[in-house]
Length: 340
Image (cartoon, rainbow, N blue to C red; front, side, top):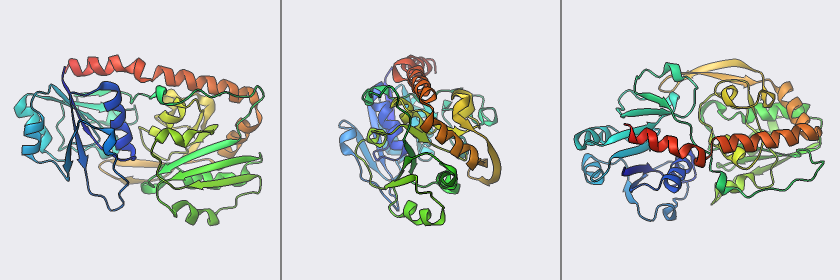
């Protein structure tokens, strides 16, 4: 099977996701799309040394040339217009779209809609769909050593590029901090300088909580998790969440709302109640939820004070990461592609 990959080359989610596919499935050909952005991040040309690069949206002739000699093409979230589907059908090349429910576009025509989670899976209006989890790159994270009586004192939140309706729940976390009683440090990672700093003055943060804001773009996304103990991700909506995968790969427990898809696979004791807040339309209607701030603070305090709970949670994180590692899921990917 000769696999083609359509990739991105910056440290946003699509770049991280497609780079992992490149590293672990070693595609026969790679096409990197350099889409102009109002707020661009640096391009990593070293990620794909053998790739074909396209600035802007690929044309029919771009795809016609690139598709030659391929059996299957994998792309994430988008086909970058209709040219891919038209030319792949003409060339007899199968296509896999790793889709996100909120951005489903009925103009897309992949051979397979590959859904990364069970969030709204039943609402995907296509018969040619399959659940294909995004693997965790466990090999990228060094093994950490812990003191026998260690509890969690360093909590991490990853906003990345701020998304609509505060998708990753930064403001819910900031609200909850006023009820945290433990001595902890909370690191807030954001790729938009000034965004977090502008929000913090609106919230009552007690003196026992030290807040660190990091806004630089890192060369290696695994550096986000170095020295951190627990990821706090009170995500308001969404299926795939790459920071959760990465945190588990780093051996970190994760705090999330008790919603789909989180409660499909994460331990119940890591989840906090959430209530409906609003909804909005992207390509589909999406419900927005809000984590209960008191429960969120209480779970952070439990991680910070209960050594046994934290130790067991670290073991659970490692087990989950192994179950969803590339080593575990690579055969599923290859089998799925070969059977198209």
